[in-house]
Length: 336
Ligand code: AHM
Ligand code: MG
Image 1 (cartoon, rainbow, N blue to C red):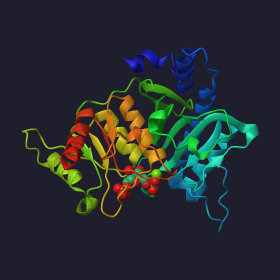
Image 2: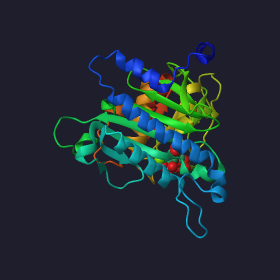
Image 3: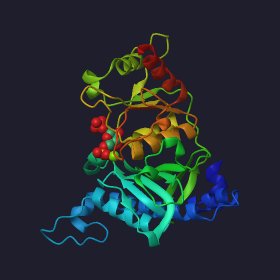
Image 4: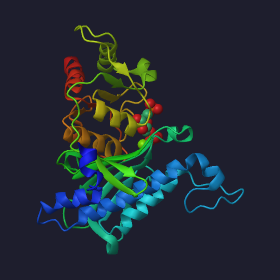
């Protein structure tokens, strides 16, 4: 049992990644250093989120709550922390954040070979009521030695070298894949360390839960409508699926990963490309799903094959258990 095995022999995320890297003699520890800066950002956001309800009273980290002075919004603050941590790691060259219109090109003296795409605090509509929110990130390697260009981040998701998310929920959980399976770590607040609690996560092949904003149903395309109808009124004798929808992608995807099932943010008549962003929402989650044995589909193709043209591009997404995603793929194929 994991808990027993690691009770005295703590497998921290740093130790875990160092172990992985040591299998690659060419590795110089750059990835480990980059990751430790991402982890720092996550710990900061976790602590800020935990204090969010008290923010008006005590102020958030580093901010004095001078009367009349506006507190920095949690998502703005989180973004600043991530950008500064990533730049100071000395291992990044381009950053794309949901919070910033333009990509950040790191100055030459601090440049490294990684490009990081991230949503520092996703699910912001859930902040004020204390519901789970999260950080999502994906990591690319710069294409060649030359001057970094925006093309370096406009690569298909399958080129990512790593992806993950951190969920600020009842506990703080970081889920990571560097392309060799998926592992989950839980923050031990007394140690300030992420400890391996969910080794080698595999998503069940089929699940009993579907997760979608059904309030958009009036505008759905027909495969999505048919699929959800099938979840509720299955015709093959199976039981109907349960609906769970938090409205925080990290929390909805985390549950899908652990329990199985499907998460959908489809296209609709009002938003023909859905809502979620390709680079720092769709790709990292699709990467994790595939690494855990599931699938991710856009309604047209394998999500990780998509080649984004713009950094804030959106795409419909259906991801989760292998067999459940097969069903939606079949409905789209039947339309053609
Ligand atoms: P945000 O980046 O503005 O927080 O929006 C992203 C969030 C996702 O976490 C979630 O899956 C989705 O928006 C929910 O959208 P909706 O409220 O349309 O169901
Ligand atoms: Mg977002």
